[in-house]
Amino acid sequence: MKVVAAKPFFSKEDVDSILGDIRVCLETGALTFGPSVRKFEQMFAEYCGVKHAIAVNSGTCSLEIPLRYFDVKDKEVIVPTNTFVASANTVIYAGGKPIIADVRKDTLDLDPEDVRKKITPKTKGIIVVHLAGLICPQMDELKAICKEYNLFLIEDAAQAQGATLDGKKAGSLGDVGSFSFFPTKVMTTGEGGMITTNDDQLAEYARSLRHHGRVGVLHSRLGYNWRMSDVNAVIGIHQLKRLEDFVNERNRIAQRYNEGIAEIDNIDPFPVPKNIRHCYYKYPVELKGKLNAVELEKILIEKYDISVATLYRPPVHLQPLYREMFGYKEGDLPNAEEILSRELCLPMYVGLKDEEIDYVLEALAKEVR
Ligand SMILES: Cc1ncc(COP(=O)(O)O)c(C=O)c1O
Image (cartoon, rainbow, N blue to C red; front, side, top):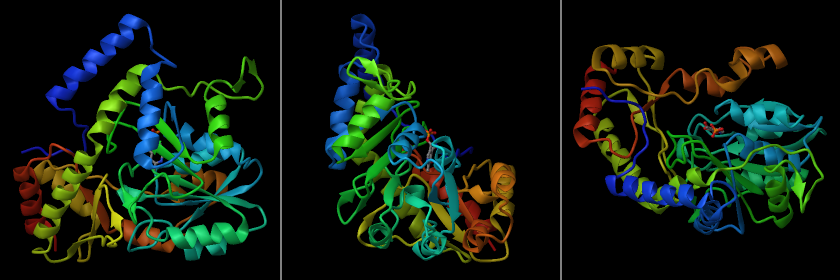
């Protein structure tokens, strides 16, 4: 049996309706700035419980646009090391310096204690990443720090569509939320991104910046082509309609993994606080025995044809670019470095069959020690 780490899900019924709606785009010529983009934005804003959702063409520019709005040029922005490199790169694109901070070993999310240590007079804001789909449980502490030091808080919710904290959706918890719709994500548009905010001025700025800085009929700022096409928005509309089902199914799969793993020594899931609904973009586990994550990953692929994912090895501060640009080295962020040697993510996607989950659990039962 071959089990892949992640893939998108479209029911046959959804494929047919998506194709039908794309046909309308083609026949009417409404391929960009059309009704599907507007509808997707309205639906997404409503879903997240925010005033504005602005569709763009990646989860990278949905970070860069707010960073430009907050004017981070020659300033510092604190970013966790345990994330996809885009979270930190966007600070550089916007002219700022990413200050890479450590994560907590129990959540893999940003550690507020380390954030406090890294604040300087140049700090302008914080990007919190809801890694794997777990909203950072320390959001209250991070918000308090932002208030104390007058910093902005961007939620990088690229992996957290549908996740909630005290019933509130990811993307509605900071000054602005940023989503990615890359194909492995909880919902996809192929490529795409979304900015969510209650801030009217930021929303106006984002709409302008994604369209080469246009204000009215003039181009008054330096923007870029960061527009989402209607074809991508059509896919997004149909995926968003399924998002609650997707999150429920991912939780069901996680529950089956939890039950299986409870029977196996030296491997544990990461705890999920009661006030959080995880959306399980990934299902990370912690190895507690002799075997490290790299060794187990190799065994699973070579002996069982099971692919796993990592979040993220190496972490941002140990990527060659960050070593070269900022001089980071081993030992700088000890929590992340230690936990990442013992963490990997089991296959997780809608469409994963029970027999595939059980096959993964059997392999773990045989190999983990
Ligand atoms: C945490 C995080 N931030 C940002 C991004 C960038 O999103 P995109 O690939 O859509 O540009 C991703 C996705 O890959 C991500 O996982």
